[in-house]
Amino acid sequence: MNNDYAIYALPGFACSKQMYAPLVAEIPSVVALENWGMGERLHETQSSEYSLKDLAAFHWKDIQEQNPGKKVVLLGTSMGGFLVQEMALMHPELVSALIFLCTLGPTKAGFLSPTPLTEEGLRMFSTFPKEQQAFFGTESTVHPSLKANSPARYNTIFQYRLNNLTNLEESIKQNKAAINFLAGDIDYEKIKHLPTLILHGANDRFVDPKNAEILKSKFNVAELTFIDEADHFFFMEKPIECGNTIKKFLTNKE
Figure 1 (cartoon, helix red, strand yellow):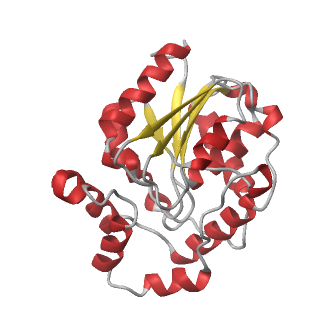
Figure 2 (cartoon, one colour):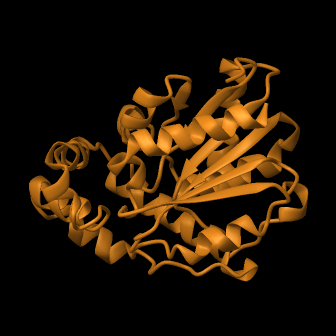
């Protein structure tokens, strides 16, 4: 892969950047960023509600300080994919390629929206014991066969869920921002020329895999790969397969 650009990864909803640890092990050039109120930015709270455009602008500032003047690859998972779309619109001239993992776009653009999370539901879930939160979070986002077929991998994801640091109030603000994104618009005409890779768990129960096909149709040159026997957290379930697909895409892009 060409060293002239870096790969910046945007986490999913209420997730710390540690979600990308298995992928970073496969692709060391991936730099995982942290959203407000999560992980290493746990105490960086916002005084009011914000949009994903606001968060995207924050990440661009961070990237440009780390990597001034160079093109980058943007990678986003689920809500992180929303951020990638907003970031690409802000500075398409600085983007070398886009990589989307289990994500979608606004419903006005034809995407199938997942069941929205509610503030009441998030507050209720936060009252569960941490081990119970980790169990339900893992069980709802990995393939039912993973625990039996790859107990070590299942445990890696469970431990991530158990140790994932989140600020509840920031999660609620982040969720509202994500809901507003899905109800808004994206001008795909401005970014459709960017080389794009789309990966999706074939058995994703949270983001309908049909969204991957819809997303592919928004770009002129896009590759789509479904990861078999994998759910919403396919990139943690099968990091080697996911990493190899990304490396092949970036190598062929050069």
